[in-house]
Length: 418
Image 1: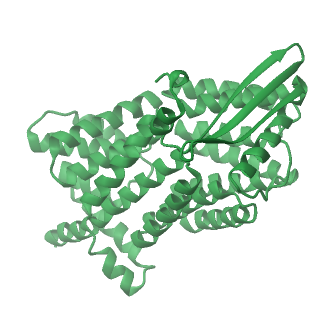
Image 2: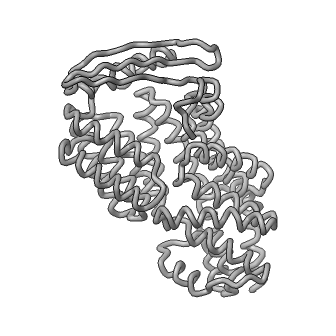
Image 3: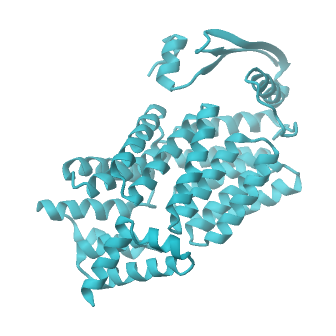
């Protein structure tokens, strides 16, 4: 899409935003001039504009001026203390390039290129917290979770040392994701709530929304679907308030997955389809992996097999391009179950290889493996997993949990073996 030739109204509709910031940068020798305006497409007027002339070495200072001007125009208070991530303009310039490339990654090669840029940034300024977090994110996306956690932990120490509260909140959030993914849910929640507390103090609404989403994720993982959905809805409210389309795309996808787990497939598809539209408009490949996969899972549950195949294969294609392995087994087992139903040949050795590579297989996937391979070990594992989850639940929560489609099917299949 060529955004340069669009008027403000078209941009607003295409990007699904209300406010548009546009500017021009000139550089002559060691001096640059920057002019910027903020346009409100709803009220059809410029609500703020400004211009600066600075020495090139003062480039990082402009970030603070821009933030202050935009926040005042939008009537948002800023509680975060004024501090600059780096005094090195070259490091900051390279970081912005790396961040832009990361946000537009399409494959594994793109992620490795971001890593090379971040290495240059940290060579110039090893205390730049945001660069450290971005470095950790690239390793996470590549499936090297141990390395990502090491980077997040070391970056947290740096953030605390220089009293970067925003950085501390960000690092805690990333570490919480690592703990939760590894099954250490209490540790994950501790990190998320500590991060949430910091972000509320700093009035970092976007960060608060991110924390809500991650707290929701943990509640989903422990089988508390209602609580998870409530946190996702809180996150969505903030995303809409801030016109944060990346955040909104993720929150909508999470809400859709919650409804899938609860067995409300029509609502699940409604939210997931809205998420897909946003992520496609943003060209957000990493996010598309999950939304496409989740839509495929819903279509599978509805026995709309032809449509499910299309979504699952699209997700797998992006997973391969990105070198992302996190949900490959989940996506593949759903796809192969459909192939089995339709009499389509598939590679049974491939599914066995994916099983061997998996460090942990959660209960729904064990159920699907039992359905595909007809090996009782998988339904026994699935049954034990849901029993373990219910061991810490109240009676009321247990009653709700075993009534959801997947736990109910696991119990039914297990009892057939007795």
